[in-house]
Amino acid sequence: QVQLVESGGGLVQAGGSLRLSCVASGSILRINAMGWYRQAPGKQRELVAVFTSGGTTNYADSVKGRFTIDRDNAKNTVYLQMNSLKPEDTAVYYCNAEGLARNLRRFGSWGQGTQVTVSS
Image (cartoon, rainbow, N blue to C red; front, top):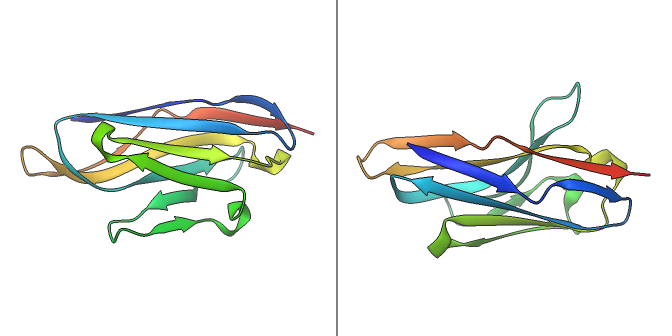
């Protein structure tokens, strides 16, 4: 079983910054893809930024140039640096990871989410 724990959310004024962290733990052999999604009230969950299984990064158009995803593979951790935050970035941010567990079964896990609120 693989668990994801996010941290770093909070309340910030428009134009401010936050840095989210997500740590994966458990019976992990390999993480193939890992990244961030968000869900605002009344909206569907959407991709924010991810490291893909092909080794590339994908960003939502709405966050390009403002958000940066990076990772520490040794710590099974992914970060999301969010700059120039806007009220429309307000959402619950979820971490997702997909890969292979030590029992050689594939896993796909979600974190519990962390709230990001941007005031105008």
